[in-house]
Image 1 (spheres, one colour):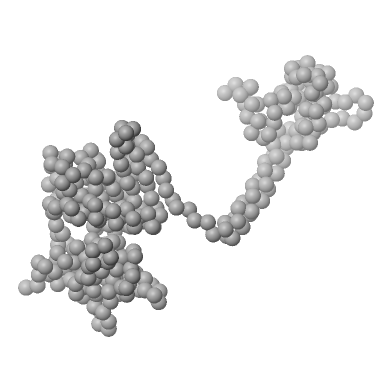
Image 2 (tube, rainbow, N blue to C red):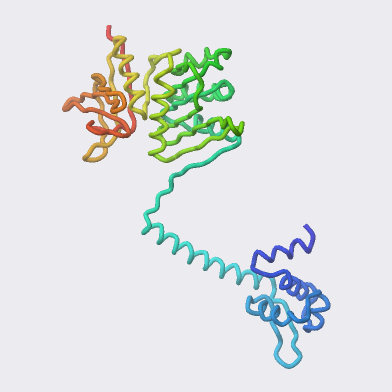
Length: 340
């Protein structure tokens, strides 16, 4: 970076190009008269005194008393430090006003991001899988499946419950390793690719046929995630056919009620005794209970709930839009033991 480029950055401190020239001239050449400054800096004579007054006001130059005015630059560390301190005070004032407004306005940020780069979309999906803690629900086309398969397996190996819908284009791909680790369904036709992580983030990728490009929307907003989850369940998951079902392992973890109910019914129908732990919310506040899982209560389009019996009481457990159930489920741990 040359000298001119260094001084041009003074514009960040509110200096005009002519003001920069005057200040630069005085810094590099020492105190001068107005006539000398005009000649050295190459600025128009009619504007010189306006420029001097502006720079004096900003604390960048000083002028001697007497008839013959001599101008000199205030040292950089002094002049710019003064401006920086003033801007810091101004920043703090603005922050206080914004903070006060935020407390009183009660505004809501929906947390939506638009992604129109295929590489970024794929990386965001990968990051969601890698960062998942409890549950991954998704649908993948062949290209995405090839990229995500090892991350899905790694998630399952660390205890995440993974549920995946694949499409006909994946028929030519070896999913043997996936089948042994995760629950997979195959949908007869193509649909949007979706990843839902821990019921706290969702990404939807779609093809714009008219524009011939792909884009995705990433959500961290509870209501939108619920809508996407509902769409996934009814449009993608339900019409699909199982390739690999729920395997027996130490613990299944769920954030979603409909997949919980599907697992419960599958295990009960195959002669398993089920125990569970539910963490959620009741009308009276938070709840954390353990007990025997007795069955499900499903009304399509209305509720997907299950029954847990503790030593003292029987509870009905529902999902995000719990209407008549006792508990709105946030997390559900399920264990299955074969009845001998």
